Image 1: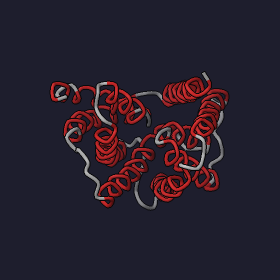
Image 2 (image 1 turned 135 degrees about the vertical axis):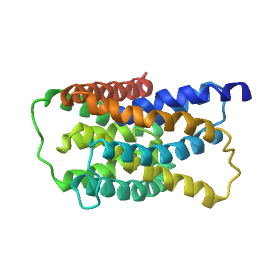
Image 3 (image 1 turned 135 degrees about the horizontal axis):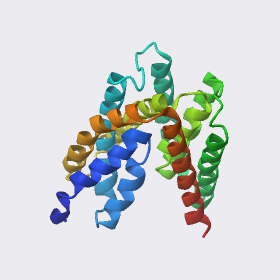
Length: 251
């Protein structure tokens, strides 16, 4: 598969640009694409996790620097990110323990309904500012992390949509999601090392090279997008991803 490696840089650049601009899409799009290119899942998943850790932390830093989000430890954005990150790590570990006991098609159906519903609600509440509560954020962190631990995906759409419905601005939500998911991916990478399994990390440098290059471009792009336009775009993507998950499960 060496002939494919050079193509990974522009592919990772594009996938991470979407993710760092809208808060979702890197793992969701890149993982199946790499598998279609012929790479083994044990090559793909660890490399994606490692690159998502690097770009998540870097993306949060750039979004903070251009004032899309304020991630000081004592700021509300910073505290939201830490709450989501803690629940992401704990919830993912707890979910893995239960994953083998639950029917996959049931999980995917429930996830699809939740994500699609978020997209619909966001579209119908464009002119409203939901009241922020910590109860909503804690519940979101638990559900989103449990979802990721059970299904391996859907974290970005659920966390982005849930934050917006919890009263967090869309640009703030992108930066918060980047930081929370970066920390979650670090936990996944550490788990791979702790298990001491033989993992092929050959894809990781190529993915990181492309993804890292896109982060500053995405941060400045988001800064220039009007808040309402960003909110509508996120809502449509969340709705589409939820609908696609349902369609693949039920058809």
